[in-house]
Image 1 (spheres, helix red, strand yellow):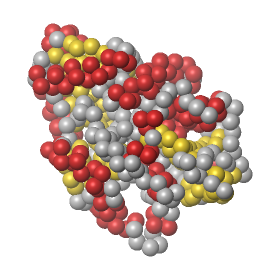
Image 2 (cartoon, rainbow, N blue to C red):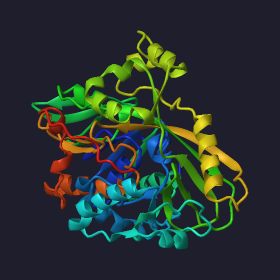
Image 3 (cartoon, rainbow, N blue to C red):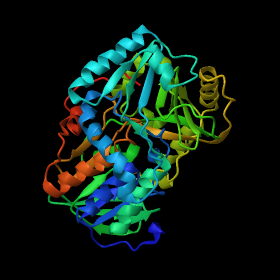
Image 4 (cartoon, rainbow, N blue to C red):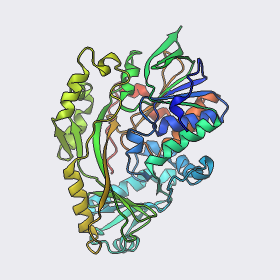
Length: 436
């Protein structure tokens, strides 16, 4: 199916900007509800954040304000393969966090208390229970936190499957076609200017990841948004460890049904210094100060690339709402070495895994690490879904569902007040919730 060769329609009920999992899920649910949908993706579906995630599908450890959404989403995932007619490598083996000491266990206990009203079934484990869940582990800590009905899925498959099903239902999926601007008339969205022409519409969903703040700024609104860079490796199959995805001793990992592993450094975060980094710096400064030991700042070719993007005549300068087509994020070799060393330390009886793939991805973040899911007051008809701060892959299906509800009925089935854009404009100071 060559979705990028489709004819550009002159009008649609809804135009979606961004082909990550939020945009693809929105296209699926809206088209399923009978709306005509066009999705614009400047590259290919899932070519940025959504295809580069760890693949955890978790309620565990989330900011409590996200739990109503994620609890509803965990009911969607087990049936999504059937609904889409696609293999998403869904595996519902739970998520485990291992506490290295009593201080970390106290943090987990605090989260359990905060999450208790949402009744998601998370529980505290003792050391022996961790060892039973992860046979052969050498560092079971003092116990852990476990949520049985959390799971995992393959990021490279999920958004494409949602987009493909939306297309089968009648949605137009335009890959290699970015959005250049938004047309308005009398305080209402009236169209989207794409690389292949204008599409008339009264409703836009902007799910453009780290570029979303630029669209919002065009309407005089303020969305503080920056990016961090994550590195992930995939290995050849190893002997069975556990169906549970885990964070332990600075390592995040999950094992697929075929035995292969995704491994990633869970402690350190790479931040590439660019000219754009200084925008909204004051909003992120408290977080940088509180966690400075975990941030690694880099001045490298990405600074030069960003400088070039600001020069008149460059493609990115001419089309600032679209930015660069392909990510220039490179895996950090140190993170790869750390991940392999941590795995070998945890499971010395297993030979060092052989890497078959490695990648990096930019993660768009907000100062409080909570997303924005909102509609602007002016222009009306402009919806935003962004800022998922490294844990948006799992939420994709429910975000698409609630946006579809909001657009088709005027309200969503889940209260989205915690995700309003105005929280960054009214002086609210809320720090990220302190769990992995």
